[in-house]
Amino acid sequence: MRAKSLVFCGAIACLHAQPGFQFPDPGDLLQRVTRKVLETVGRLPKYMCTQTIDRSQYEPISALLRSPCEPYARKQLRLTTSDRLRLDVAVSAAHEMYSWVGESRFEDRSLFQLVRTGALSTGSFVSFLMVVFRDDEASFSYKGEIAEAGRQLAEFEFRVPVQSSHYTYGGAGTRVTTGYFGSIFVDPKTAELVRLAVHTEGLPPETGSCEASTTLDYSRVRLNGADFLLPNRAQLHILDADGMELENSTAYSGCHEFLGESTLRFDAAPEADAPAAGKTAAAGELPGGLPFMIALSSNIDVSAAAAGDKVSAKLTAAISGPKHEILVPKGAAVTARIVQIRRFYVPEPSLRLVLKLETVDIAGTPRPLAAAPDSRAPVFNNAKATLQRRYNPVTLDNQDPQAAVIQFWNTKGNFVQSSGFESKWLTVR
Image (cartoon, rainbow, N blue to C red; front, side, top):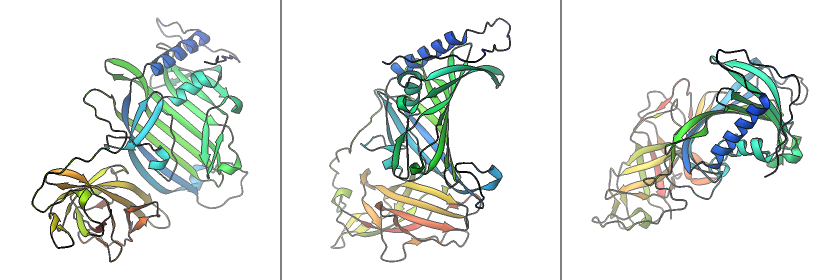
């Protein structure tokens, strides 16, 4: 382990005196905070949390003359798109693994392979704490006090030069290591870390971005009878060279240890043999090219839904084989997953909903269902919608031919896609 330098510069201010409380020496306080952070990180068990990420993109209303990387005033920006993601993240040995919420398995893929577009960040659980408090030889200085929510917090500033940094930033197909600086906010009574704010140094032009800032709020979470320091909320802000600003707000919930009753699979589970039921077939035995139609069984409320959420549907007619034999009966339950649900606000309000089918219920058992949207005829019917809407189904930019994109226009306010929405598909092998 490399030694971390603790450099205290500037005047050392004292917090306002509180009855019965003697403010500790800043150097001693920082050492206590460091010990507590590294101690809790070092003994963290394997655990999993659900994270919900709300992402917003702001663009300049008009092109104004400004210096490079000079941000626009907020009144000069307008919200152009927004979306929401809901994922499970598993943390083990300082390594983060991601899946859509409720998948109960983690494949060998990164977060950026799972979510292919938009701003994302990793390292909120362990990596930021390890590099700031241990690996990157941060230089700390005591700044003073701030009042927040009825309590006083001590603020320490820190800086890490690029030659000592493990902070990487990717943009425009380029990854760079950057120096960074920021602050930690500490409860002087308990020596608990309350907040960590990290800002990149100026980013090189080839990334397409100027700077990025991450703020993490921490609290104690009880896992298996012990308390651990985990993030409960995170904010990410990115300023791009063209004046665009990206903002992510992440909330963490449902954190729990991998206990005996938890079952996690890190690759595809073997498919069990399906019991025979007349002429029905296991989904894995369905030949390719069989047409079928599904209808949603519940509403999709855009104000609450997120990419990663499961959606229930059912077959509107049986799936029949080449000899007209029934392979899957009418009414069989189908599970789909929202791959993307993104709102656009200019030039006109619209919604992009991307669905991918996952399972079909056969003889009481959910079976994997491989299918692609049927583009041979008009695919989607929104007859039950209360308003006339236009839509245009396509594949997901050729990234996933088994995902169906449904585009809606005139989606002002709280748009709800009604149950009964029908779509046509083809089985694939």
